[in-house]
Length: 243
Image: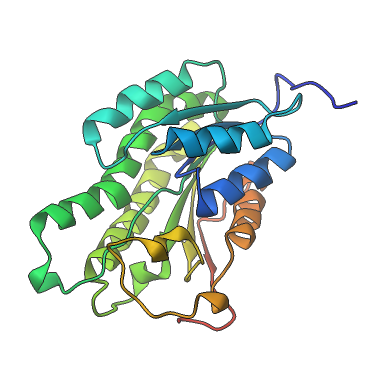
């Protein structure tokens, strides 16, 4: 017989949780004994995942929110955090990509990408920090090796990920006094639905990419580090290198 949910079980809050890396992370953390707070745009996809993961040992709470809408984020997180689970780990995984020359990129698209890849992370951290200070928890920001490189047609994406890496370092310094650790997981190409989106055009070999499950294992490993340690920046690349 399964053991009931423990009041002391760790809690992971995962953004972009309905597909790809986020869904794989939810499965991995559930299997490791975490309770889950899941956030994504599609309530239907979230609920399908929650039904898969819910058990006597795993409580799952979900909320749908469009992170490209800056006015929607704080109320959604307030709702999610009011349900009695205090996060010990925050995984900022949600994001998007856009390919196209910087000189021709519409301002609306630039602002959309900046909101999703950077500003929504800032907003999420601001909303969750009071709870994380209670648990002296961990923040993991999922970034990309594009933060350190310059790729033609990927300039906007590279810029937002570079800014995210800088934000992570600054936040780590500010929150260290509260016992909060901040890690950045810097990834090479991962085979996720991002490559199917209308805003991305590429011919990369998806078979050579990292799998969401491998990334999820790495996220769990970061989360399970003792509180006396922090992996500030971990890079995970496909064996094939930059695709």
